[in-house]
Amino acid sequence: MAISIPGKVVVFDYGEVISTTPTQEDRAALAELAGGEAEVFWPAYWRHRDALDQGTLSIQSYWRGIERELGESWGDATIHRLWLADFRSWLTIDHDTLDVLLDLKAGGTRMALLSNAGRDFGSYFRHGTLGDLFEKVFVSGELGTIKPSADIFEHVMAELGVTPDRTVFIDNKEANVRGAEALGIAGHVFTTPRDLRAYLDALGS
Image (cartoon, rainbow, N blue to C red; front, side, top):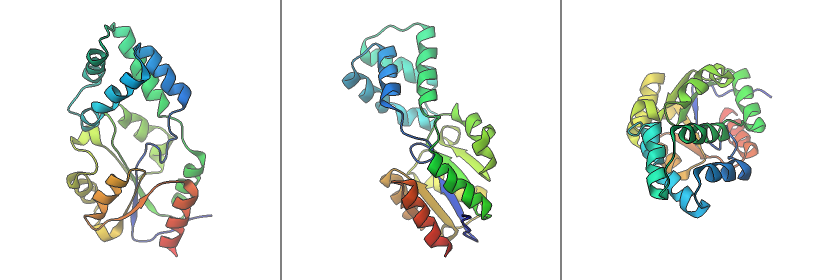
């Protein structure tokens, strides 16, 4: 059923909202490729992620930093395999969330995407089929700032030509939603597609 929210733009996060969480198999394969124990690998993986997403760290430097922390010595081929396994693990779309997006599109609701992600995701977001759903795509790694910083939300609103009272923001991380709400943006912490649909239906009623 179409969801129409006139006069507002709904801005969506990507990871674990539109995409599914990487599977245990994906995570195990990545840790195995890295050659380290999972309890050492994953803290290193996340420790430098903000810098990667902010665009201040290249993909190569990101993985080399993890390599040093693990005490490994990777060849270039291993870096390529790690990047590919990691990138691929974030590509699966949640079909129920996709249905919500399609219903918003059918209702003529304006939508945009705002993701904390490296520059390498920009092409996938814009030129895959998801790009057809969004008026604009914003990737933190291209902007040099990340959620929940006020400046990234201000940039998005300026590009979309809207004020906070005309903006709705959806993210699975509460800190990011609270950052948006601090500017006067309506926010929803994503838990399930069903709850998301109920929230959006209420806004449109």
